[in-house]
Picture (spheres, rainbow, N blue to C red):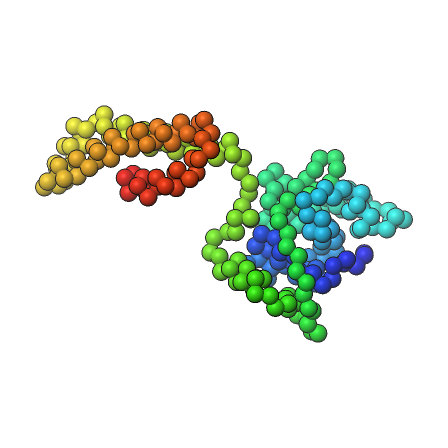
Length: 245
């Protein structure tokens, strides 16, 4: 097995950090199972060539000498599957390792490579000490303090899917408003039975429903026709829509 070509490198991608020397993997600062052998070599080669198509032949040359007889395809597939399992990745909806049919693989997430200074005694649960850098330290602290997933770790959703789901949400709210307005008599009866002064609540309900219909129609049409400023406009309207809904 060839030695790592970047023994003094720390690779950061998404919320993961990989020590290129020991194979130690961390997620949000927490230790994960260590990579060894073929999976580590495959991952290192992909991290050394981010956004590039790494052919299966390149990986074969890195993993096995020319005179080695092995079931190469099965072993490489098994190594990639182990990587995806450890990174919570998927071949159908990849966040990190994308399969290029009949060619090889490509690492699609942004990769940051840092030089590190290895300690004299490296423990299995600790990464080498990173060179002091204010920006790097700030970024590491920020990433590890996140409660939610890093945006880079989330799957990429096609724009058409986002627009469809957003349109369906607008249809749902439109239905709420229209049903409320078409059944005002029953709504007024229910409020009268529950409240001493039902008109105080009845009037705002009618007004918000009447105002919500044109707003939701605007958002629906903007999503259907792909209005380029929809995101900015929706963020502007959201503080008003939320209490109104």
